[in-house]
Image (cartoon, rainbow, N blue to C red):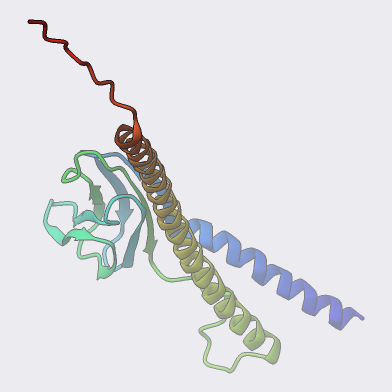
Length: 216
């Protein structure tokens, strides 16, 4: 019984630590980017830290946006124009505040919904002695496998949520276009029908004739 209790306790600690590390190490956000607008974000990074920036346009226009990443000195590390989604990995070459911006300045009337995930550094070990020379115990190995599986599940869930949101946006946009097209067809059909009725009545209507009597 105590052995089973200890196993569940270790598993619970792994799950809780996984959630906490996800909050600390990742900056994940979905935001609205109006037309003719630019939004920038800042992150303090230590030299030698490995970072990954992923982004995707969820809704709006042609689902594209400009993205730019700069180091503390203003040097451009990454720049792409009108991208729907992309991923960029780099290692910080200096200490300081790194800036990444999303721009919709090329759009005149369409706002966008943008999702990004900025990961800084690697996950800390699950156990303080995980990097030791000796092999992990069976329970520790199982916890590490569960931890990696949970990260994969979260990544897949995020991916499918974005695809579902993008598909819903496309479906709503298509439904709006179909509705306006149907209203336009109905109006055209009504006008044509009335015109045909008026034209046919003009063919069969009695024309009044006038006679003029000429006297001598």
